[in-house]
Amino acid sequence: MDKGEGCLLWDTDGNEYLDATGGLWLAQIGHGRREIGEALSKQASRLEYFTSFWDFTNSSILKLIPTLLELVPNHITDFVFTSGGSESTEAAIKTARYYWYKKGQPEKNWILSRRNAYHGAAYGGGCASGFEADNFGLGPLVPHFRHLTPPHTYRSWLFEGQDPVDFCIAELERAIDEIGEEHIAAFIGEPLLGVGGMVTPPEGYWPKLEAVLRQHNILLIQDEVVTGFGRTGSWFACQRYGVQPDIITVAKGITSGYMPMGAAMMRKEIADTVREGVGFPVGYTYSGHPLAATAAAVNLGIIKDEGLVERANTIGDYLAAGLHAALDDLPVVGEVRHAGMAFGIELVKDKQTREPLEPQAAIADEILDEFHVVVRCTNPTIIVMSPPLILSEAQADRITEAVSTVVGRFRPDGSYEK
Image 1 (cartoon, rainbow, N blue to C red):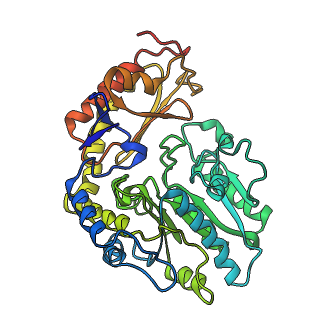
Image 2 (cartoon, rainbow, N blue to C red):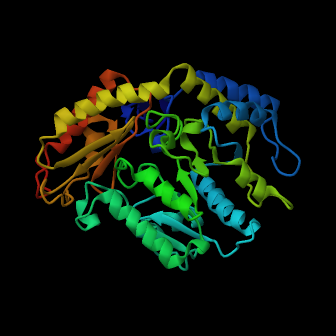
Image 3 (tube, helix red, strand yellow):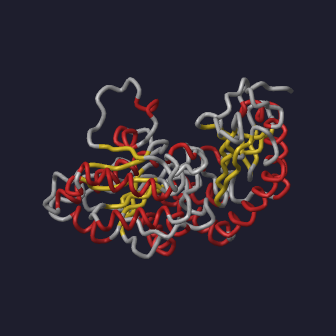
């Protein structure tokens, strides 16, 4: 790609594309915003970089923090800045384990996670992620991770005929009994499963899970790298689903991708505990980078001033309605789901058995080549989309036409009739 403007991209040959993934699930404000380019140029000529270690910070971070404090859930007070989502996950896992160490419980170091969850490509986050392929061939992995069943309600066979929420909560309680609450530091989970297929949780799942963790003195880490900053129609998905995590990881939407940045955000008591004495043992060369902080401040101002969190709901509902109308009756479409501007389309061989489709053509490639619309497939036959929050209705219609035309050519046996 060579150029971007709004929801559109142009490659080096001048071909235009509609970005329906926001790159890798970000670009909340769209591409090519001059306000950010101008702010970055001004900041780079003033202070391009200095460390945030020891006694140092910088004026860009000091300007960003009040903005963040206005937007994050009220119980969140402290931030560890990173260069992206993977680093944020590493910081969160280290924080949880170190917190219990400082509380005099060093044996409290297990991390609970879920299958088909994604928490980054670094070593600790990769072990928290629930995809075996991501860790294939890497040798010994970080110990003390346990993966539980995801609340993917459409795949009903996961729950042995039980209510999905009841099954998941009972499984969690069994895992705590087996490992021992005195050994478990935290549970980490995406509010909705991103790479797992934009799987939205069933009603009551998160409040019930949080209640069990509180009962057993286990921290809750919510990975909002994908969902934070308006993606699901609220500033943070934990607000949408009614929970108060102890630690929240973010990246992507904090700058809309204009600069690499992330953070692990946490309650004051956790922050005070881990930095007491020798100080917090997590930091990165680019933590609190002045240019990234500048981009974040301008980006968050745009999201707020232009009402893009609210727009994620209105344009998200519009796109969802179009997708349902065009896709629900197709023989290979099992489920269309969304939350704000996060979409998942699950393709199946049979609507009754819900067995995943095995296509004989690359779905995302077909949509890209013929319609110049960028989508992504995961799992591997779930189409996922996360367009910029500034998407227009005409562009939403273009996405619906592209996806429905290509999906409509598939047959339940996986053959493709163009």
